[in-house]
Image (cartoon, rainbow, N blue to C red; front, side, top):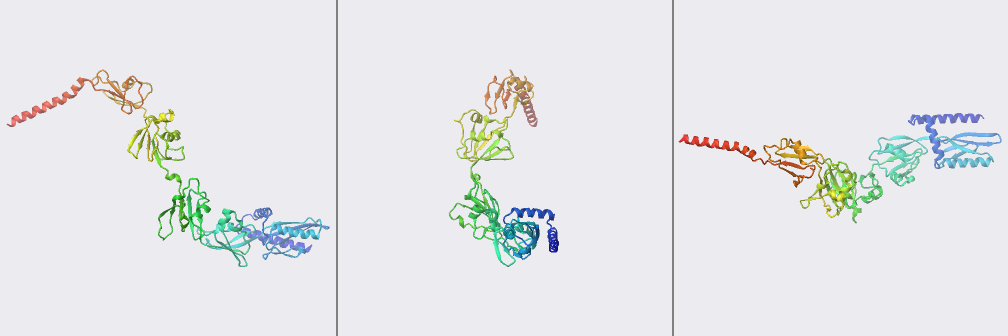
Length: 490
């Protein structure tokens, strides 16, 4: 009984000491932390027996429930009551429990033994080398290498070659990239008490961007180049990636190509010989960048409903198209982006390659089912869709010439009245001409359309005589004055 009491006091002191170490290292609430760790240790089949762990062994004998606790020492030894000293090196929580429960069962039949973890041990490992500063990091049984390294590494730290030296002086090298990408946990082991983690500086750190499945910053091994970077690190290109025009921006100080941009055909037979240098930036372009473009301008919104078009700030689309695509197909794709006042009927194409203007009735092509007048697009064509102006211009021999708002189903007389009617001193018989937006003459009997021009002719002979009479009179007077001066000078 006295031994049990003394052991309990010792265990209480050890547990209190363990909790106080956790708090001093900034681990937060020690009770909650310990509970979470115990839950994780119980659910893990590979939890390693760790110095500082406290276990409880219980079983039944003829005298009732027998229960006591034991601690794993720093040398991995523990003293388990009458079973004596046990070396737990290399043992897991599961294997230690099975070992002890078999021992108890052999000694006491039907004793229902149970070994459980009641407190987890903590320990320190040293992290040095290419770090912000050399530190001791608090760890526990399930702390892995990655958990320790990432908080201590700098942007120059190599994660491909991490040295871990155990307390016996044996060194092992690990690659955290393989652990992360391939799920190889052998490259991300549990750290153990007495370990020293030595971080090194990376030799090559490159940036991969563009049409790859995994863009990012990667650290390459000495024998790895462009092929490995794209296929292994970038996990391959996207469906639209173009390996024939890989762009490399060289940023490393010194060297023949410092500050220059190199273009590499990664599909070529000798592409494996392309070397990458530290701080290179590699960009995989989109095949769409080399597809020909046409421009759509005018009565369109500044947003696009098609993935192959780009918006501008002035009602203009840059559309990448396939050879043989027709203008009607393009306009159908942009149908939702057309402004309500778009004048499709009077659209036209400016063909840069031949310096010609091609009229195209998009209204008939898109909505009228007419296909024989469709136009095949050429690179750099400018598809111009005018904006219909809803006004009518009245000019000539009227009292108030100007532009007037369009009103549907009105004849020319309505707009003449808006302009104050014809001026009888200038116009005789209200002789009027009408032209459309294309300056084509129109019959007087049809309703006026937007952008029509109503012109009242200056046809009053008396008006013209009056206009010229002042000029003639002035000319005669000047002539007479000149003749008089010449005669006086004689």
